[in-house]
Image (cartoon, rainbow, N blue to C red; front, side, top):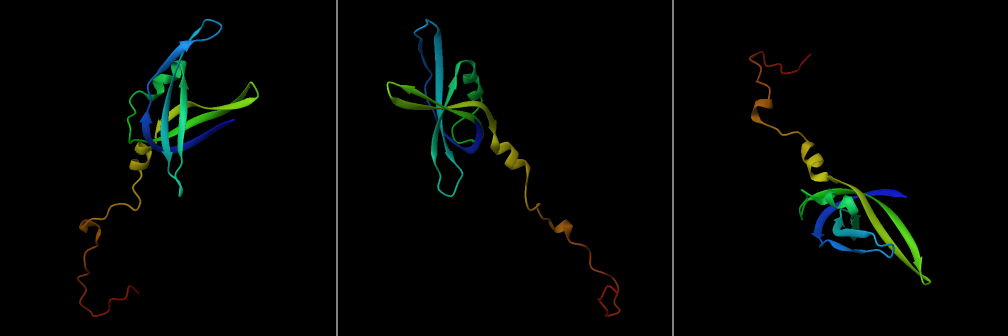
Length: 123
């Protein structure tokens, strides 16, 4: 299951690492965003392994779009959930590029007509 959400980056947590039962080293990093909805939600995402580099160049307070998958697993009769980010984009750059409505300047006003006939109708 793959989804995406936009929001403001609130916090980047420290990198965690360890060794699995199989003897393989692992590392992960979590980060938290607040969604841009009527009722904002805070969501904590996880980056695993080489995906940690996706957060490089992104700082707290930035508008980002996170692409993620949701995964659940059972451990001793209790279910645990992961929200794994696999792509992060700077959403602020896209929204700043679009400026609606376009800016207005005095140069946009057409000159007045020099016709003094008293008839200002165009037909």
